[in-house]
Image (cartoon, rainbow, N blue to C red; front, side, top):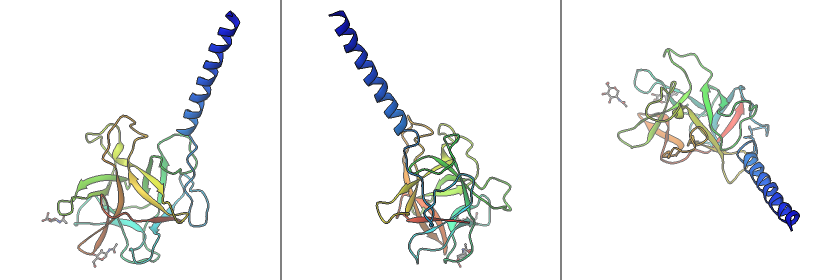
Length: 210
Ligand SMILES: *[C@@H]1O[C@H](CO)[C@@H](O)[C@H](O)[C@H]1NC(C)=O
Ligand SMILES: *[C@@H]1O[C@H](CO)[C@@H](O)[C@H](O)[C@H]1NC(C)=O
């Protein structure tokens, strides 16, 4: 009788340990790597151009001088071509060597600019006309949100076709208890300039190794 009870409680605990291990794995590295235009996993610290998956949606991602002042904004070239700046990804989780779907990443343009500040993407102010949230460049100085949450974006796979993604601001890996108003990125044309903003049409993108 005693030994039966013991086995019973043991098997319960083994099951619990297995359940915990499964959960830990799910939240660790089970997310698929993001793929570039040649089907290779995106590598951390390597340069990639981000460009629209469909033609006639502007060109590569670049830095936009929105209003003759700093900071520069995240936007697109007007037309597809060789212009634009590549970006590098830095995952929130330390030790990662590839960029995974739906995980928090810092995204930084490889560019030197006249603005003496970082070229990391940062959730910016809300545009008064459209009420869409713009994406600027710079380091997050913890403006009201836990940690540098404004600097973290994620790459989500579109249902179809393969290799096409959306960019989202929703840094729940950085702060699991925060209630973010998440948003996906699309184009916002202002005075002929293509800015990238959340809360509107979503731009499907692909990643091309630089
Ligand atoms: C650009 O700056 C000027 C002067 O500060 C301001 O009147 C104008 O509204 C700004 N435009 C945009 C798009 O921010
Ligand atoms: C796109 O065109 C607009 C209007 O001509 C111009 O102001 C802007 O600088 C152009 N964008 C880029 C990235 O060259």
